[in-house]
Each structure stands twice: as C-alpha cells, then as structure tokens.
Image (cartoon, rainbow, N blue to C red; front, side, top):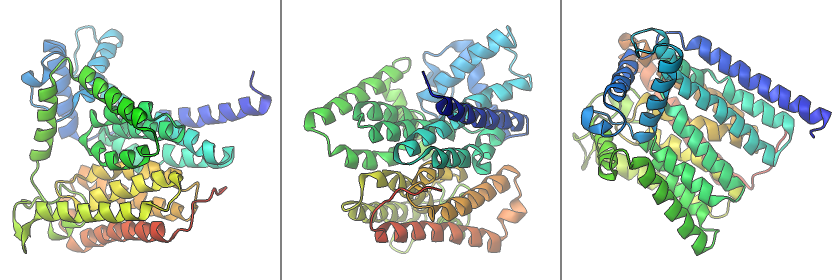
Length: 395
C-alpha cells in the first residue's frame, strides 16, 4: 500500500499528465501540415485496402515500419469507434492520426519524471516533467503540425531509462524500435555503444542479438531489404543543404542542392566532415565525465546533427529538448539553454507551417536565429568541456 504522501504525489503527476494530454487534444483540432497529414491519410487508405503485408510495394513511403504499424492500429480503432466503412475523409480522422504522437509526448514526460526522480527529489522531477509536458514547441510539433517525432524520442527516452537502471538489453531493444520509427535515431548509437562498454562482453553480445531479433521481427510483414530501402529513400529524397532548418547551412539559403562544390568539397561532404569532427570532439571530452552525463551528451549530439548535417528538416531539432530537460536536474543553468532553444525551435516550426515565405526570405531574421542556434550549441560544448562534475541540484 502506498502512503498518503505517495498517493498525493501520484495524483499530482497523473493530473499534470492528463492536463497536458487534454491541451494537446484541443490543439489537435487546429490546422496542421496538410502535406504530411494527407500523406499519412494516403498510407492509411493503402493499409485499409491492401493490408499490412507488402505495404512498401503498394505505396511510396520513406517512413520505417513502426509508424506503419501505428497507422494500421489507428485504422482499426477508427473503424471500430467512428466509421465502420472507414471513411477517413471525416475531419476527426486527423485527430486520430495525431493521437499516437500526443500520447508519446505524455509518456515521454513521465519517463523524464522517472529518470530525474532517480537522481533527485519529487519537486524537481515534477517541475522538469511539467517543463516538457507543457513545452509549446513540443505541443506544436505533435498536436498542431501532426508530425510523429515524439514517437522515436519516446523510444530513445525508454532506452536512456533502462540504461540508467543497468538494463542494457531492454535499452538496446528500445533503441532498435526508435531506429525503426525514424532514422534520425541512428545518432544515438555512438552514445549507446560508448556507455555499453562498461558491461561484460557476453552482455554486449546479448544486447546485439536481441536488437537484431527485434529488427527482423518488426520487418517480417515487409522484408529486411525493403526496410533498408526505406532508409535509403528517406536520405536521398531531399538532396538540399537545408530543408527549412535554421542551422549552419540555412545562412546560405534553403533548398540549394548539397552536391554543389564549396571550396574543396560539396556541401554534403562538408556536412559529414563537420559532424564527424564534432562527434570526435565530444567523444574526447566524455572520458573523464560522470556516466550521468549521457543525457547532456545525447542532447549535444542531436543538436550537432541539426546544425552541421545537410538535408535537415526543421523538426530534427525535436530530440534535443527531452534529454536537455533531464540535464537541468544536474545544473539549473541549463534551464536558460532549454528556454531559448524552445523559442528558436518554435519559431522554426511556426514560420514553416504557416508558409510565411516572405519572413523566411528575410535574411536578417533567418541569419539571426540560425546564428543563435549555433551559439547555443557552442555554449553547450563549452559548458560540457569545463564542468568539473555533474551534481544533483534541486530546483
């Protein structure tokens, strides 16, 4: 039996999460990204008419299988509750499409609570959970835009949670699920491998075997080859220096082909070089750091990926914020980075969704926000390099 105080704490947590869910459901009625949502509706129709097996043979899709499964389940729920004839032209179907990402946001908020609670008290855990649950940029991306980045971020947070509790096999399984949701999750692999080194070789082998088994099982209704082709298609679809992302390359403009030569190399190669050097530098600073710095490192690497890589969409900033929120529990100075990052991410999403091309073409604003993002990343690097140790802080 829980104590009276524990029951009160559980009630508060549940109330906050429920409130964040209801707020998101309210905003899900707002117009989202018509292009993305219409594509999702088209995939839903293909799943309903032709089934799950052979999905990638029936439609063009650059999304890995997990989201296909989610659409398939969403179809069944919608058919059972709303339209037995599966009329997905009804406006409410858009709310159904948005709901999995909304639920993932809520679950992610709770995982943040669980991770932070491991290191500090209830009050700080509740504050940081709320900071993410009510983050306007996170709400905007999932509930209004209608994108599904929150699903793979939820899986990455599960992976971090299990790593924090010394359960590397489950951590590896959830990382695999993240990769099978969005390929951006691959950025987490170097971090995962580094922190996996503390375990015995037999444990590392078990992690690899279980991850491969999950990958194959999830791929069975399609084929492993088709799944790899999805990753390839996703990468090759937009060969531009920046897909509306306010990053390093956006200073030179959007939608410029990344095969254009800039000095010795093309933009794409420069992206590989800069991000590769960035990863090596971060790795060189990890060696003397506390294992708890995994959260800050995760945020930094996703941030670096957003800034330095080409072919980056505005939404690729999404995974920066959840691990950064956890890191605030170790140093509340990171709260300022979190707030400013939320602001720049929100602006990036809003001006792309509303197609305010006049604003986007205004180089002064574009360069200003892009430089601000770059500055935030280098401040995080400076902070990480110079921190003595990670200490628990009550907020």
